[in-house]
Image (cartoon, rainbow, N blue to C red; front, side):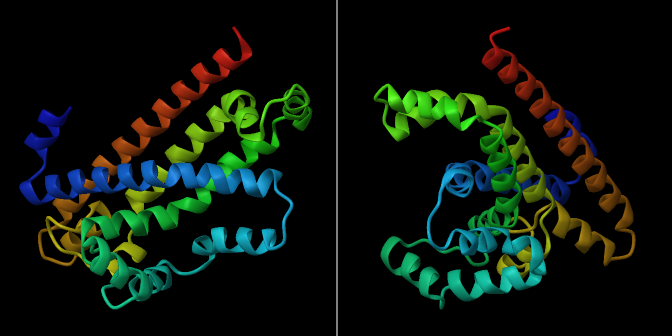
Amino acid sequence: MWETLTGILGPAEWQAVRLSLRVSFWATFLSLPFGILVAYLLARGNFPGKQLLNGVVHLPLILPPVVTGYLLLLGFGRRGPIGGFLETVFGIVLSFRWTGAALAAAVMAFPLMVRAVRLAIEAVDPRLEQAAGTLGASRIWVFVTVTLPLILPGIIAGAVLAFAKAMGEFGATITFVSNIPGQTQTIPSAIYSFLQVPGGTEAAGRLVAVSVVIAMAALLLSEILARRVARRVAGT
């Protein structure tokens, strides 16, 4: 598959594809544990500020992506409080780096991931968890041994939704990390760049086709994995 792509795509297009896959993978992988935790808190928790947390989590779905990117630049830029701290203490720079693109993609995809996992948790009968708790199991052990296996299809669905959203993220990414070829130029920003120059429509069309193929492959893979997990949980 990769040999075919390298034969069809030019160097700049191939760079954008590789960077998009890299950004989307790390955005999904690193945000997944937090997504599961927040989804569990929203589904099972009862604490002050729950609705505020729910609103903050879903805020990127409501705000224009450019606004989200600007807020990320204010907070995680070199002069921002978090970005300045990360650079001073750990030497980590996010703004205008591919790592910043991963952060922007993760923030934009996080609500979709949380929603999918939360719905899966809410579908689990709480009495199953309560029964395990009455047998002396701790809350964490109940989650690991009872809840987690039952919500695996939802986790897979949430991860795929997040990955697909990260692949298509444009507004927040270009605002936070700009559009630097080979460094922060993902597929959407590369398509935008190609459409701004004469004769760039063919390259843009190839990247659009690649995006569709990757998205469909991810969806098919998630469907296969979710079915296998569901069968295993059902014991069939």
